[in-house]
Image (spheres, rainbow, N blue to C red):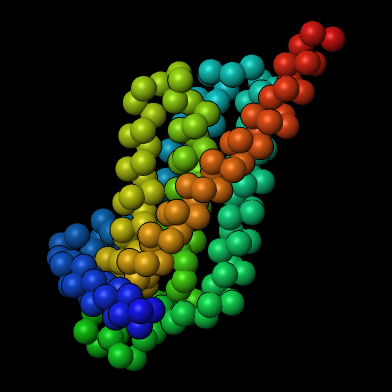
Length: 191
């Protein structure tokens, strides 16, 4: 069963990667990096301070940062335990695919997917009652994650698993915030 899933994963990756068009290489090579997204992170932070008292906003951002540390640590540990070779380093398929980046680390699961989906989901959970359009932020993790297939460094299962880990982690940390921090903030207002 696992062999069939991995075979499907390789075939899906080769197919999706082959859809790449040279004219879009610059776009996908840019989208796959963190720095171009810094204005989006600045928007996330400013929305917290616009919609919440300063103390609440700072504690939400602190929770977000702890979550990102947790997600990145979990991602790195999993990569070393599973030790799946990236497509760009896989000799069975690397001559069949387009490779725009050549990282040497392991593939499963995608840190781009886990980090971007966790950040976006946490932001959406916090701000959904204040801004109906907040779900548009999911364009970032979708583009960011898909870019990893385009540039030749992650299989679809790496992306899907990373996204799931990110979403579940965000839900967990949001609920911990609601359970442990929010009551403290409410009680400190009455003191």
